[in-house]
Length: 94
Image: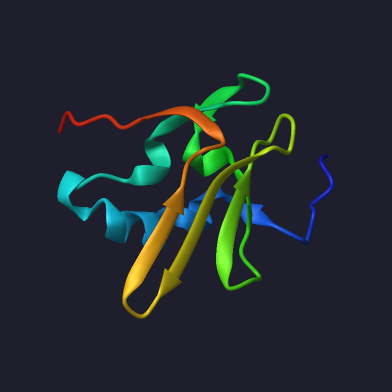
């Protein structure tokens, strides 16, 4: 049995915020796959370790803990930093 870390939730916590940004794609963005720029691990957004107890959200690689994604919202803007990913693959088939 794996110990639960109460400091973060899984990548599914990004479903709502990222879903709003990618609404035109009409898909669950947590199904998208990304590749960590640090260790090369590839996996779905849903598998990221998301820290959401701050003004924004930070998602870390479950393999090496490198920051892969940052999302900050204000009343009139959103900042999405994907610099911790080599790429983000979003399937557009329906």
